[in-house]
Length: 520
Image 1 (cartoon, one colour):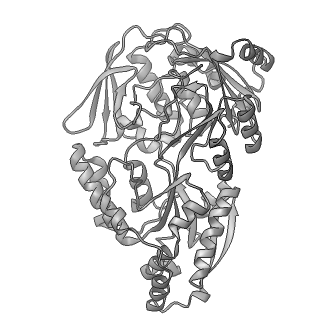
Image 2 (tube, one colour; image 1 turned 60 degrees about the horizontal axis):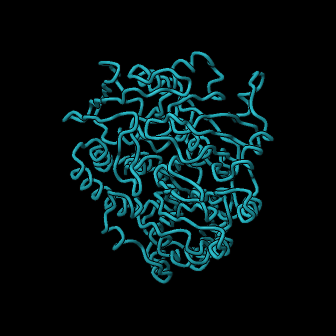
Image 3 (tube, one colour; image 1 turned 120 degrees about the vertical axis):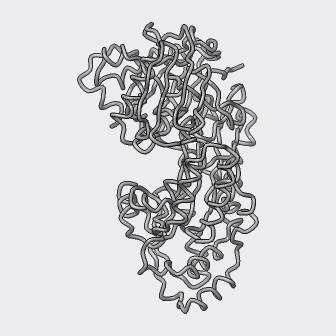
């Protein structure tokens, strides 16, 4: 549900855009203006489903128990939790909470608020069912202590607690606003929600009493600007301070990035992401031509990976070699060494070995909508034509695309996964566990007991180094099966005015926090 629908019939005294604009003009160095392409969805944790704009607002208005530590975001740090323990069997997590923290409405944060928030999200948000569904019990030991017990070991659970859906809400505000809490979100975070106007803006103001110190900014304005060229012009003219690429393939055209890099008034921040985009095979249809691994291998060797990165992306993406990106803590370097290389002659030999006439392979090449997805599809189409395979591009709206994917009505499709927590589980389990093949946009892996058992063992093993070794094995086993041609990982790119300082890009989730950002 779009946020503006939640305002229907509400009698909220919200500041007008004129007031926000006046405040911005009167105090420009204390106001950060961020251009975003669309209205936010779900500005509160209980219903949030990982929509980027709303999720980033949540992480600036609310706090989670734990969060990823900048600048490399490889370790978790305490936020509302001062410290935590994990039982040897990996099923019980104990938390010592910060004292003296207040919600924006002045009510006290305590263990009851944590229990209330997590149980509320678990009950109301199907997006978290696979993870919060493991919670067996939340016990309040004291106002500053609680224990969360799981039904089975899940070492990535702490990572889950750093997601926007795990943020802690004010129980008093939920009681006060009821169904309108999403339009009146109240957390403990560094910024306080002030107003929202559909198709116009979201305004946040500084929380001077924030427990980690007041933000350096007084105000954040998210300006909703759907057109990419308008966002670029506003950035160049100083109408906005930040435009985010965020791996969505929809922000600023790749060909414009070099021009922006040459603008002395704009600085460009880049960071690798853990997003994976691939040419995916239907791995669970014995009647498909790609059921033959020789056909799949022929296709993966037909792709000019470096040509795709340089020709379509102009350096704004990196190659993906297998089931995990190379910046994942569990990435197996052997996968890079053994990854398919561009070799169309080998592709032709493999098709001949399979007894397949490529001229008879008339694929529909499904793709998401958008100009850049169209460019990727056209590039792959040309690569397939070079080995004699005809592919007709079908750019499809997301709801219809998701339906045909989950129903298995395709042979090859351009797809991808964007992890929202920094753990290999975010890619591996949902993507390759055969029991989940029909549950989402997965690789539709056929039932294979040995691989399934290995994936679950890696997911549930408590010791980090042992988990890493298991994920090394998982990657090698998956690579043997050639479930996809792994293509690229788009970089996370932020374009900012050169006087904006202190922003550090997070990669998983690809959402930014602004309490340390300032302008000079």
